Length: 287
Image (cartoon, rainbow, N blue to C red):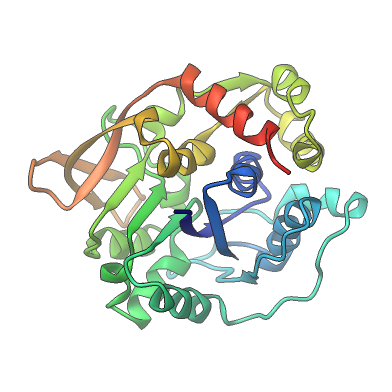
């Protein structure tokens, strides 16, 4: 049976969000129930998501969510990839102010069946859990791309953008509460030229275009978000360890304590070559 997925994304700055959405749209075992956007300029981010959905002729509900964190101003800048909207058909009108209710209603409609995949700051997810504390227990899994757990690294960007939201989300009890952090995602990289050369499927053409602003300042793509998404369908790509995560709300640093009975799972190993083969094979077969 297809995996039911809700995607919460800050598409538009780092290119990996678009790379992730392309994968979900191409994955034959994914039923993408909806997309919500988060952080600065969420409507522009919704338009960017609509480009990829239109490319494959999919009418996926897209709802702009929170544009600012729970506390303080946003660190994230408006999406530079929005410049590509001039060159691609996209949606411009969205239902605003209903993202959290959309998530709540969709999860209640499919109890125990939905994976909530959050690959941006966790503002929308924290608001969802605050509005309806029963939601975490109704998920099949909560899957986050965020944090840095095993290597003692500094605060990761998604968590740092709204640490108060992240602290609330990690305090929630879900049957599967899983994070894929920088510990493993930094091991899955590709040079810009190689990545662009592999964007030969029509689904990746707008991704390659959006990537122009990213590659103008750095020579590589790191597959943070698509790696997290791929573990839904190919869990063998990563190994996971169980324990407890806490978040320092001052700076967004994540603290990890191993515990065989802990409430959280974090990625502790990855197979980079297997992931890249899986990703590009999946996208190449998109219809």
